[in-house]
Length: 218
Image (cartoon, rainbow, N blue to C red; front, side, top):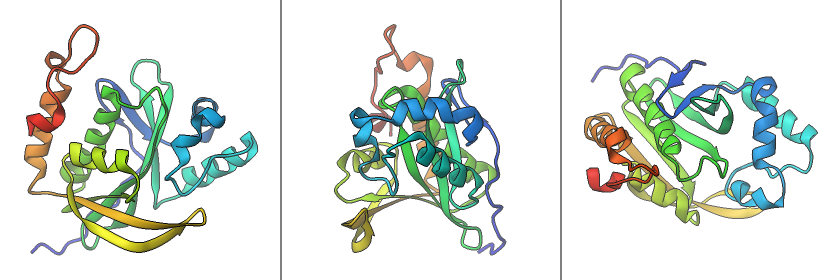
């Protein structure tokens, strides 16, 4: 096998039709992200993340600054393509250029972004960059085994379930069994085709509702 190192992901911009991903910038993105994630009505957004919810803006800003400076995980804000308003974030993490393995994680979609075409497009853009631009062999998705929405999302997006790591972590004072999923470079062409068919304007009606589910297109 080719044993050369894969390049590490850089702070670039990835543009789609609905959303774009840009390096997380607390000064540019902090106000909207704070408004979209604060308050008890948004506590559920943080349930399975390692951090949050935050009691005040100062603690939120401190974590955003730390995230923006981090190299692994490497955070990107997810912006509405037209308004440039940030609607969430995601990160490349556990980056292993030697083995050409990388993980997508620390995903937070505000309620505006959830269950939207933009949410799916963001995941497509990040996967495409990993396989086509950076040449990684394996793309991982991991989540709390109790996080049923995340587990359904992994399967919908084309990741394969690999098993449960029992008592894998302690997060916020609770045991976490971790569900592992992966997508391989040889699987990407078929996953890409399904993504692009689903994201095509012809797959949505006049109200923006999908005509054919992504899973069916695979």
